[in-house]
Length: 121
View 1 (cartoon, helix red, strand yellow):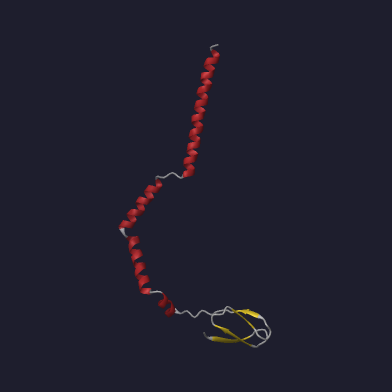
View 2 (cartoon, helix red, strand yellow):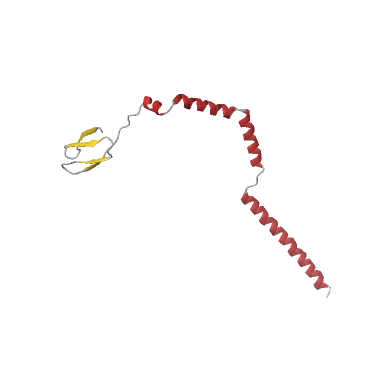
């Protein structure tokens, strides 16, 4: 493990810490410090971590799929199917209104039958 040496910003004494340490403290003034890391990544490191040619090929395949007729037909079919679906809250409102109308007709029918029977006496 590589040791790193820096100066204490508080008293100027030497600070020693490992490159994996996240914090250190000065042995003279006992002040603690968070260790800030510099990013050493360059494009070569990134290309080693990720196979760029493979990513480019996957991107090309994705673009081809998006432009294919099969994808477009599938999306049209999905949009058509979804356009025929009534959202649940709207269906509930329609059911409540329908139920109120039916109850209203029943109430009117009962009122008329009641009027007919009470007027004949």
